[in-house]
Image (cartoon, rainbow, N blue to C red; front, side):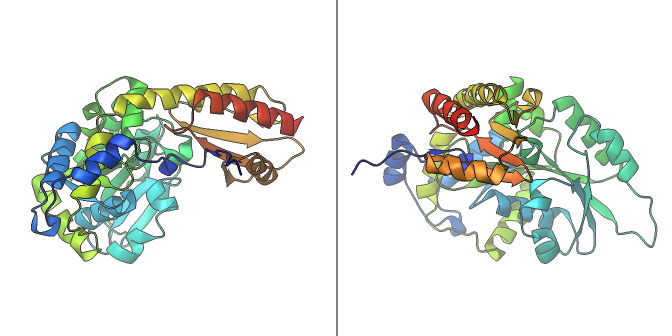
Length: 344
């Protein structure tokens, strides 16, 4: 029986490790990372810190754990964290900040837009016995629920300046920070210099099987390491995983292909009656598709699945599609033609 390849556009988390990664994992020098003795993990952390322009870095199992550790380090119980109302930390991390750090989240619409600085100024509250103390602002770049849009360095710098003057820490959820840098054609440090800590993922567009990095000052990482242990993130001979991460960091430029394929897909789909896409918001590898015809988004997802095309609903009448290394330009053309046939 012939197995038909599925075209999986649900997320860039579905990427498979390359053969080079598998070979590196098989031969990686390892030690007990909880004792600080894994040389491959140490190499990855050192490289990650340098790339982000930070003093130190910590290898963690997931981006969510990295974000939650950052909240734990930067805040005290009962304090407030300001973030966008569609931010990943607020929307997709299962209420972790309330459960783990005991903080109140203040979700603000539009924080991750060019108008964000003015919105932040209006959001900040004066010192008052009735209000929680605000201690942290969380940014996100690229902005997942914003359709993979990019926050420009000037906007981030302005946001950071406001926070610095108010003695607030800034954490950057940079799960796809390299996508943002590639989109803007700048060094990633131009985006990470305007934050006190940053998390980025290896297991999305960079296609490593597991892992993220959390970076900041040496003092911040020392505290983060303790929280990683508390949360069960001490992984012993983790160099087997870190080896794939080192290879992943060599493939950052390949993300340009994902961006080109995303624009190709968005342009093709937007020409189909019943499909609406804001092409100006297709800046990286995420596409938000509005289904406006007789067929619903969920029904279209089901019909595409029958044709071995996987994607996911992203809200009422909305589908999200994400390009990555395992989706070719030929796959893109097949998705466009198949969607057109289904809707016609």
